[in-house]
Image (spheres, rainbow, N blue to C red):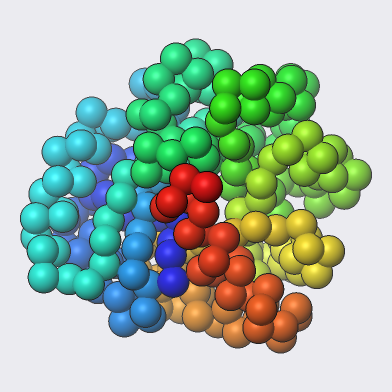
Length: 232
């Protein structure tokens, strides 16, 4: 399995505060058969300790040299930072220096320029992946608004915790609807602690397999992620 969204780097954002907890997260992921994790700390200028990312990433990789998980770099970019930062330095903010960019919307307010920015990303040869749309209140109220994002060319990543109901009934229901309509492309941990691996990740895989079958479940957890690693 490949996890494309994980806040696994210590002292970089709202994930683990110590290297010990980062290591525990990786080792718990390894037990599940996860082979690759893309570290994606939040990127919003002046909001998090992004200056610690490179050094702490290297230190974590060094400590885990004997582990069977490969760590890669990326970001989860706040939507309002895309124009100011990402288009000018796109290889820096994409997943594993690919053409795929993971981003998140505000949770309660739909950006008026959302479709324009998504189209602008495509015109700059960047493929946008929206993180956890099932958790945005406006998509819960208006499914057609979500469909507009997909039709504009946005790929979709669902959180494993959403699938098992950790974020509530509405979030779980929208996760199921998106997946059963075949509109999701990735399921990821969005891990901020080891709980995401020990409690929710494998349960979410089993739940998705029950909903849509083994083939689509494997696509959401394994095969589609391979496109990012090979930059297809």
